[in-house]
Every structure is written in C-alpha cells, then in structure tokens.
Length: 394
Ligand code: PLP
Ligand code: TYF
Image (cartoon, rainbow, N blue to C red):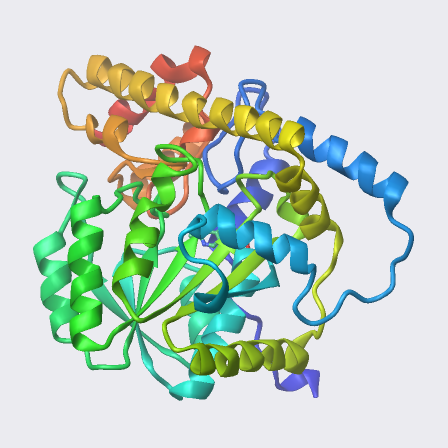
C-alpha cells in the first residue's frame, strides 16, 4: 500500500522553523512561524492560563468523555467573546474545535454537505493552509485581489469587483483581523460594504478569527465580524484560542454558526457535529477547559486581558520602531506601511534571492513570501536588522 505514495510537499513555514532550530549561529533571528514572542524571545504560558491549569488539576473529578459539542460552558463564553451579548440564543450555535484549523476544517466539511464543491473565495494572498484545509473538505478555492504590495494598501475596489462576479451560494473567506500574511485589515466601512454585497448576492461569509486582541484590542478586532453578523442572514466563524490565550499545542478553538432561520441553524449545527463524528468524534478537553476557567472568573479574566494587552502593545511599539529603523537605514518611506498594519505579520516585499541571502549571510529567517513575524523582533536589534534588509534589497 504505502509504496504507492509519493512524499507530500512540506509545510514551508514549519520547514523553515526546523531549519532555524538546526542553525548553530548564536545571533540568529527567527521571524518565521507565527508564534508570539516576548522581549526575551520566549513564548511563555500566560499567568492566567497557568492559574486556570492549577484550578483544573485541583477540581477536575473525571476524564470521562465530554460529548461531541465539547465543553458547553466554553462554547458559551467563546460565543460571547467573539460576538458579544448582542447575538445570543436562537441566532448562534457554537462547538469546540481543534484550534482554529479544526474549526475551518469542520465548517468547510459541513458547508460541502450543503453545497458540494462550492467555490470559496480567498484573499490574494492568504494563509497558505487555507488551501489544503478548504479543498480537503471538497470546496474549490478561488482568489480575489486583496493586497497591493507596492503600497501596503488593500485593493478594495478590485476585491469588490471580483466578489460582484461571484455566484449566489459561493463562500467568501475573510480574515477577522490581523490579516495573515499581510497585516492589512479591512476598515469598518469596508466590512459594511462587503456585508451588504454578501446579503444582496446571497454569498456566504466565512470568517477566520485567529488573532482577536492582537490588532487594535479585544473588542475593536471583532467590530467587523459583529457588523457582518448583523447585516447578513447567515455566516460561520472559525475562532482560534492558540494566539490570544497562548495555548497553541492544546488545540483550542470554536466553530460558530449564525443564522436568522432557527430551524436551518439547528440542522446545520447537527451536521457540524456529525462531521466531527466522521473524523475524530469528540474534542480534547484541556485547552477548552482552561480558556473557559479564565473567561468565567472575573479576576483571571482581568489578568488575561492585561497580559494580552501587553502583548498587543509590544507589537504596536515594535511596528512603529521597526518602521523608524527602516526609514533611517533606507533613507526612504518605503517601509512606513509596517507601522500602519495590524497584528503579527507584514510583508517586506523582498525577492526569494534576497530572503535566501538574509538567511545564509545574516542568520535572519523570513518566510519565502517575505512575511515577517513582528513579535520575533527584538528592540536592541532593530537597527542591525534594518541595515541588513536594506543592504540585501538595494
Ligand atoms: N487562521 C490563520 C490565519 C492563522 O494564522 C492560524 C494560525 O495559527 C490559524 C487560522 C489556526 O491556528 P490554530 O489551528 O493553531 O488555532
Ligand atoms: O502562519 C503561521 O505562521 C501560523 C502558525 O501549518 C502555523 O499560523 C504555521 C503553519 C502551520 C500551522 C500554523
């Protein structure tokens, strides 16, 4: 059997991480994989999460199965974290997922049951894993224009024109905030215009929310998706807890469905649970349980929000200071867009050859599309880094 298989192409971001780990140079810099790092270059367990784990250890009385939906209290607090109190009860159903990727996957499989081989529109560029996750479920990826590499701005008119050419029933995948890989986010007016277009043309919005709290703030980062949920009859959201609770390996996330039609929503939700049964059945408990403990306890929640705000403001400051360093090094404003963009990623606009030179000659690791992880930057090294980038790119 196995001899019939060819080797699968590697995940380029994870392959880069492996290469970085093998690099013996002491002054190497990892701006690759999208994991938050603090000023020491660590990705620590958050205080609030550590405390929640202690409580769980003390209080949990059984490891018996939780059920297909997962932890119902986790689902309730996640629904509110994402959509607020405005959309409750009848219009929303939430189930626990294996991270944001698991939510993307099960929602896509559920959609494929409703509309086999439906077209799913993705931003150009998008997170590379969107393609295998969505096409693996049977959907057909197609791209809409999104990012102008020359200016760092969004090609909004071109995006709208492409979506006007979509067919009723097509899926439109949107990054909720902190667009990966560009850091270029839609304004609220743009969200409103896309929502109106989806409602008018019968397009189905599917929002990937992996960085809530990393852009402008916990509430600000979901203003667009909340507006969308008010304006359209139906949508789905894949929410990840990996980054904002720093529980990456625990694989915690939520699949959220919203609909005006309570009967149709019940059916869709039962199909979502049935999809899970067809692949892995029930989700693991630990990650969801600790997130639930943090969100339900006023003290832990406040502590978590403070820690998250510290992470967010560190990235905002790094963006500003790195853009300043690049302006000094290049004597130009060509990298100013970095200060305006949101979240963990921006693209430098370098060629593959320049990226290879940075890695080989300077030990600076950048993803092949020239995406950098802002959180991987270190304040003491901004000027050196800026000089190296300008040297390879001019
Ligand atoms: N969506 C985007 C855009 C991401 O960058 C990530 C990455 O981590 C995810 C979804 C899913 O994350 P996870 O499955 O680790 O929760
Ligand atoms: O884009 C990133 O770097 C993060 C982490 O297969 C990631 O989203 C990278 C690759 C992957 C899963 C997660």
